[in-house]
Image 1 (cartoon, protein in one colour):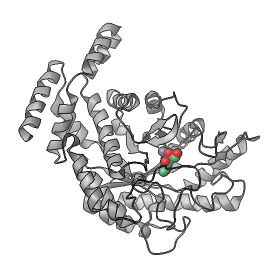
Image 2 (cartoon, rainbow, N blue to C red):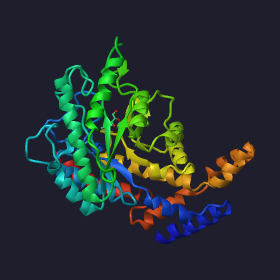
Image 3 (cartoon, helix red, strand yellow):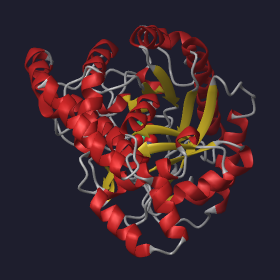
Image 4 (cartoon, rainbow, N blue to C red):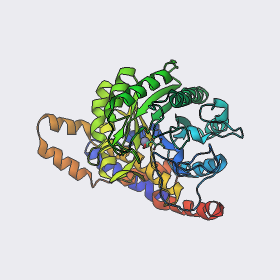
Amino acid sequence: MTNKVNQRYEDAKVRYAAIGVDTDKALERLQEIKISMHSWQGDDVTGFLNPEGELTGGIMATGNYLGAAHTPVQLRQDLEMAYSLIPGKHKLNLHAMYLDTDEKVDLNEIEPRHFTNWVDWAKEQGLGLDFNPTFFSHPMMKDGYTLAHPDKEVRDFWIEHGKRCRKIAEYFGKELGQVSIDNFWVPDGMKDNPIDRYSPRERLMDSLDEIFSEKIDERYTQDAVESKVFGLGAEAYTVGSHEFYMGYGLTRDKLICLDAGHFHPTEVISNKLTSLAIFSKGVMLHVSRPVRWDSDHVVIMDDELQEIGKELVRNNLLEKTNIGLDFFDASINRIAAWVVGTRNTQKALLKAMLEPIQELKEMELEFDYTSRMVYTEELKDFPYGDVWNYFCYKNNVPVGMDWLNEVQQYENDVLSKRG
Ligand code: RNT
Ligand code: ZN
């Protein structure tokens, strides 16, 4: 087995070398890339703020596969299992509602000390931590609004939450020695056609400005803002639209978060990356898979995922990009979901790194679109899977579909025993 993986890699290396691609170099680059795996695939976005936690608006997870995590300890155990099947060292993306404490605290009261267990664990596991304020599934989300609510008392609750989240992200960054991206997604919107689209946007802008009024060292945390075209119960109008956050992010020097599911069904985020790269300081990605709507299906190796990989690699955008995942499928084994989505995201980057990019760019500059087409089509049949398998093998994680056995074993031993 081992020998075969090596042998196949050597063969692949020769084939790629013939078109000017250095596979060793590609693997070195891939080794450096951290994917921010999201905590919320492990428990269907419920969190630990209230024990009966359920989604009460804004987003929805469907399915009831056995074994969802109900406690921070269970979630960390599941995460460890998933990370053990993914090559490389990565990050975990936490939401505020994943606090780990016996104290009864609300979202406007949380502090770094409610997350110390996560930090200790991240240190032990060699992981970075990203963060997200939780602006949903909470009684203070009133009339479909949080930061854009007409009532100041409601806005103030959420502003306080946002401020506290930045302090927690700062604490993560300091403790772990790597930046913690703090991503703001705000579901505010209306089910039916609004009369006034302007005022809620003004209020959202003012609330965000207040949250961001304290300057925090960007070595520790950077803020990102995430747009959306529509949401459940907000079909007609979302306050934080793409144009809103393009304007906001560019004028406030924030990272702009692009979620692959937050646009019209034929609109793709891959085609937005270079425009943003020219004007913005950086991007956060929520790699996801919309099936007809923002359904947050597990990321598979589809055209758009490969296109995202190519755009990032061909245009040298990896440095400016924070790659996070955002899906939550409750109808399959949740650990398998994490592993498939994360490994696919890495694989898409690898595939892109195995292109003779310089040569392809030259063909294009010389208007030799014939060669461009022949090369890109023939490349599809190159043995990138052999390069990927070698990468897994070198990183001591299962090669090919061997990891499925481990997930099934874990399902039998651990997940099936959970209530
Ligand atoms: C919702 C956004 C947001 C959430 C997470 C849980 O449409 O995509 O990113 O999925 O914050
Ligand atoms: Zn998202």
